[in-house]
Image 1 (cartoon, rainbow, N blue to C red):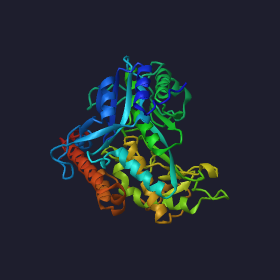
Image 2 (image 1 turned 120 degrees about the horizontal axis):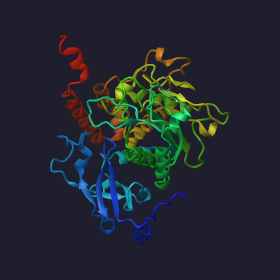
Image 3 (image 1 turned 180 degrees about the vertical axis):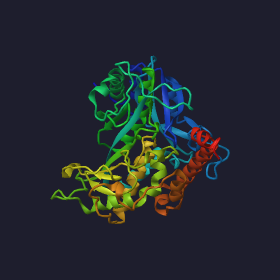
Image 4 (image 1 turned 90 degrees about the vertical axis):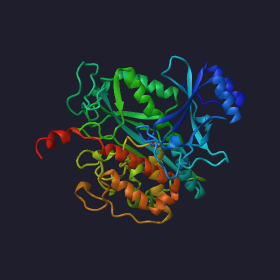
Length: 456
């Protein structure tokens, strides 16, 4: 039986925590990189802070790079004022991997005057969903999240290797859709499914992807904020399960030189709030004008939104020809060589699959960016290019940025996306990603030592 969330009232919440014998509560905030930050409180202290609205952390937690360095920002207050964290009780779940009963709850951040913190990734997604709501539209999304299992690697200079499964041997070739290859790690996935059930993470199918020990988990279609919460918690859960089986799980976009990268494909549709009708199909089961405009918005604005769906230097290593990843914004029906695929479907399930986002992206930012692009297309009544027949790798036009700096420049120049996202979060995000790129530029790679050291 799937555990139910706790009720929101303070007295009922206390009863829920007592009934589950919770001794500590992890109050979690998702930072720009998708990393869980926050505080761990004894249960009584959590209840007190919840009732008195006194749970706080510095605003600067949203100004950290993926390495944990605080940026020098022109936007963030230099004195690092506190912001108030308010737990979203509907997101509270039991943490299944601790011996001591522990709960986790995702928090929203607010300034002292009551305004939501505009640089919070979860708040950005809320803002985009509010734009849809004002039009009487309700988006529905379903991520497909890929990741690699890998043998433990404590030396970052040493390349990853596939882990050893039940047979005692690591994979040496690709096993796309291989059932026996998944079964090599049955104990891990049995634990993962148990953990997901305990946490009300609504995952669907599990398949083996193209890379060695590369897996994909599909999520059920649902409300974008709830799905983003589940994806955020799922990534944390997979890493914890893997460690308990003495291996690693990585959502890095391109962890192996010779293997495909890992994506987070986002299936998205839009329903009418009043009738729950899918607005992407006509009564005759044809693609609607709104659907085509949604695709056109993705085509036009995805290149500028790339930093939010391909956020790291490594992200762009994934986006190359012939390795199951898109290189452009072409679209087509039942075509996996395009960036925007329209699966075969009935009118009720008509959707577009955005194949560009990487598994390394922050789910709140990636879903918000993808929906924002489609929204701009719908409100602007944009027209898409003709759908691609055949191999999109051989088509010209619609190219995506090839590296992070190019993508950051495009985001900075996009007036439309800055207006939707807000100048503050865009500016802080640009500062973070440029600081990360500067840090990356200080590292000398093995390729440089191998080919330049004695040859140039």
